[in-house]
Image (cartoon, rainbow, N blue to C red):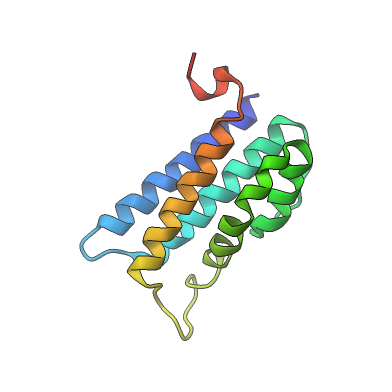
Length: 132
């Protein structure tokens, strides 16, 4: 259970990091977007860890959502969020054509990441979420 809590702790830190980077002056949009993807990835991996499901090292969210959906069909609701967040794992991390995402895209990514993390948190035992 400790590992599950660690995954979710890291996911929440990624959400906080994304928010701080987004609200910085000037905002660091590329890094904020990356942390949004990371938050979702870590939350999904935490859920799989809870159920002793092995997963490969990947930044692709769709396979993680599919594995989670084998345990809880409602995870299919996260397919669109997974598709939108996955590119942020690599798209803006290295020099190339697009150095920064649009501010509106990062705002959406933050909302999607929050949705994924909260979705997972609602499915965890109370002793892992701190709620009674």
